[in-house]
Length: 66
Image (cartoon, rainbow, N blue to C red; front, side, top):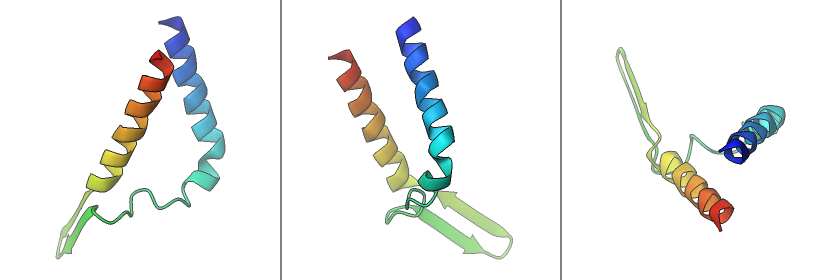
């Protein structure tokens, strides 16, 4: 458990330090993300981004357990 918490903490620190470069990536604007704009309504559902992040986390956890 301690190893997992330290790993997660290091990942969060790395993402925080790399944020200026990471926000330039097209995450959140991928084809398949749903964005509806109408009068008084702005709806955004990052479907493709969510699937991609889920896949990356699944692969990372699988790799760390191996």
